[in-house]
Length: 62
Image (tube, rainbow, N blue to C red; front, side, top):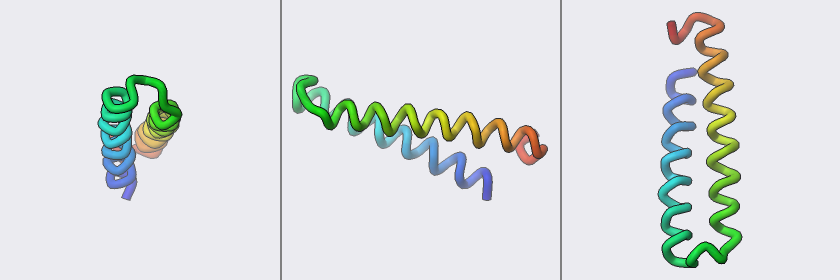
């Protein structure tokens, strides 16, 4: 279950990265969508770090 959450978080980060690149190219950086994509990506990165730390702590990812 933990590994699935980690994979889902990582895929969400990749999707947010692709969306942000698309927004940057289409809107030329003048959109709030780019900022929202960045916020989502940073939040997912924080969650990923927490999930990885928890997984190593409980020994599931050793």
